Length: 148
Image 1 (cartoon, rainbow, N blue to C red):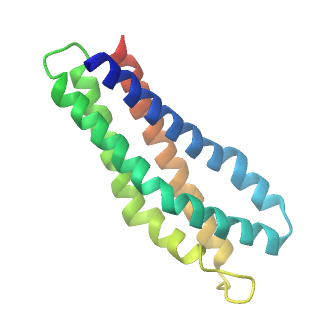
Image 2: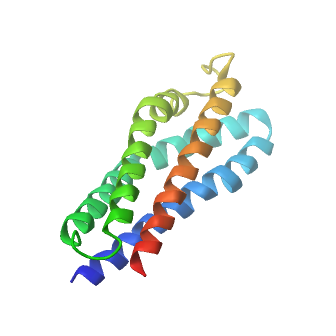
């Protein structure tokens, strides 16, 4: 049963990493290349869609890692799982404190009501997101290593 938990957790975290990596390095560059109103509307729509799903994915991933750490405490790799859990906790804290406030504003913007500094706010979100992606990639790498 522990093996199944390890694999399911690693896959779920890995897919989350893939989605966030894609947002950072595929979707946002595409949206940023669109004409101003189209790109901003795309960012707002993406913020609404992913903003509704990602909290459950992040918290669910963290919960699975916590169960893995507890259930596998006396197995090899438990320390790596605990560190991965700490990194995922950091990613949740970063999300709540840094990224979600910007996203909550962004998802309500339209070309008519967006603030003058909307591009600067989106660049700030991107910078925080790059760091968060690095953090969750590190957590994922630790989980993969703990599998071996």
